[in-house]
Image (cartoon, rainbow, N blue to C red; front, top):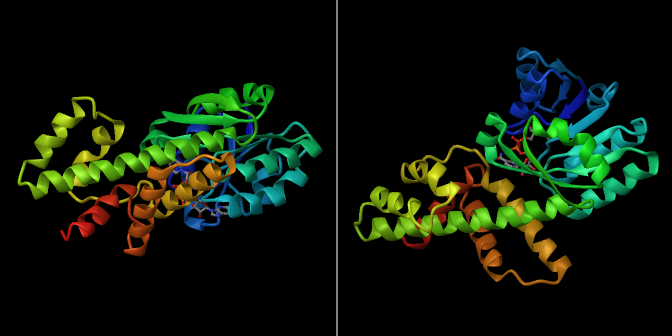
Length: 287
Ligand code: NAD
């Protein structure tokens, strides 16, 4: 059993922390949102009043926060205070250079740091079927693996920051598929061809994807409750394009799709699910 300080009990963090509790770990949870902490306590978790309170007796700290400024703020409080050998596992999706810097800061005091972002969405978090891409040294991965297996399938993909680069690749593929499924829907509906039957056919052929499987019905019903917010995907597209610049590679399709995601925000859809890219495609077609 591990003593875990879990910071960030949002759409993803709340079900993840609950799975760790159910697996028998001693989990103390903190979030700046009081209702999130109260909901965690109602499920049998230990509530914390601050970040410091959450990590006081932890041998593992897990963060699941929106973006790098929040991770940096928490890490600045936590890393200098943790005893050597403590695991610090950041599961947020953030820019790789922050993960690299946190790993170096941890190494200076003996804290073992991993970047371990996830894919699989809210359903994956609820069902503990997340795909977890882990950057950091192999021995640290081996130490964290049993805990990560409670949440899904962890894979070690390289050194510090590598998990975030894989996550950026994942996010550009996901946004691209949403953009194209949206175009398929607009084409089918605009041609007065049954969109439901059309997408069912696509889902059974070479165009099949998890997104078509899981989201085609809600997209056709214009049901855009998040899930994963457009605002967060906008952040991830910026991470992917920054990573491309750092790697000196060109990602022209990602650049275009990033502009569609930016348009979704500009049109006021930032707090909707990322499948609301369909609304941008409709707007472009005057529908
Ligand atoms: P969320 O906004 O629902 O949750 C983040 C939580 O962090 C919120 O409850 C917020 O109150 C809390 N928080 C913010 N700043 C804090 C601080 N300084 N200290 C403590 N708590 C703080 O976001 P989410 O959807 O759970 O996403 C979390 C991360 O996981 C993001 O990086 C996101 O890109 C990534 N992600 C999300 C999904 C998804 O489907 N939602 C899927 C994969 C990855």
